[in-house]
Image (cartoon, rainbow, N blue to C red):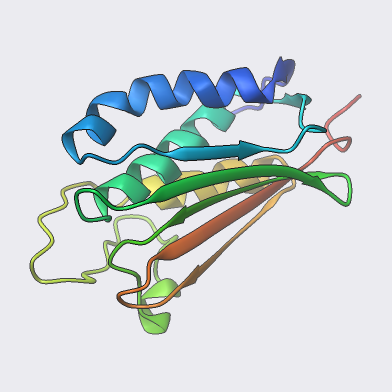
Length: 160
């Protein structure tokens, strides 16, 4: 894959992704809460990849959070990076399984009652797309207490 960077508005792009995810969030009775720092504006990056990163992280948060639970998205500028966190109060992930999360075709079984289907590629794609932008991704999670996935993308490194 090749980066096709363009300048785009981050808040509007987040809204576009939330529209796509709306049916899943309605089905689970989860209304994602969004906080966007006032300095978050334009980003020079591959918009399609950025949307895929957001889609994968937000849809996972909804998928692994019980009906009526909470999902938050926070976007800020920190040290010349766009930082986006997707936070949920879902089932959580053990520290052992956190090491496997970003490997292709790996699905961690956090709960035997979870009937979440997927290919095990979503987070591997997220990691690849973030790295292609010279960014970073990390996860903080605890079984029964939800997860926080945070990725950062540099604001200026892709400019030519």
